[in-house]
Length: 200
Image (cartoon, rainbow, N blue to C red):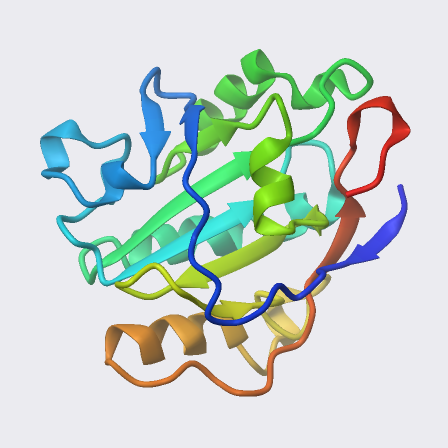
């Protein structure tokens, strides 16, 4: 495990498109968050969803595990308010079998994910977004421009001691039509496990 910080991609970046298999058996794309709910890859999708949260994560990373309940709560709390959520695992499953697609399916079912959990086997999507660690959240507005990238809150280890829920603050701002907070702190976690020992 190598402690890694988010690269903090440039705000205003357009959300790179993707077409990835999700654990629910559907294919998840950016466009799927703009279609009618019956055609989407997630129960929490909305036509022209005013906000989209993409989180790069995985099964085995202790940092990702530590915030998993918080992400599930965000997915459920904002499902009726216009936030679409997609989780993406880009790890090398050959060397980290706990992050394989079958194990992703088992985890999503066991934890009852309220959002799609997608597999980026080629790792091309992680590279397009500039993802570096797990978890690595990216929040986009209705125009699918990046408005927040950074940590979920100010205490990944002890949720009871969190004082600032920074990702939630950004989501609330976007849904209210306000700018996301200007001060954004990098997320941290395990490095994405690149194939062939490459770096992101």
